[in-house]
Image 1 (cartoon, rainbow, N blue to C red):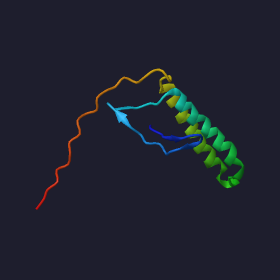
Image 2 (image 1 turned 180 degrees about the vertical axis):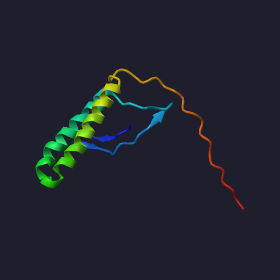
Image 3 (image 1 turned 30 degrees about the vertical axis):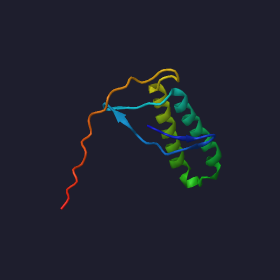
Length: 98
């Protein structure tokens, strides 16, 4: 997953990237930031969610928490790097002209 941040608080939607059939993981610090952001978002929004929709919203936030907890476990520390694996060659589309 690749997420871009505009400091101090904006984060893009995730972009999922795989290399060698494995997901690319960012630094553990970045994943922890995202996980904490889920909690902050829930704390600010939970009181404004309709009671009839609260269980579904909680399930969605719990799913996000579980996902980021897994990503944190899979992530390297800030000083560590994921070994580079060269991606497979990409063939360029052929453009036919008349």
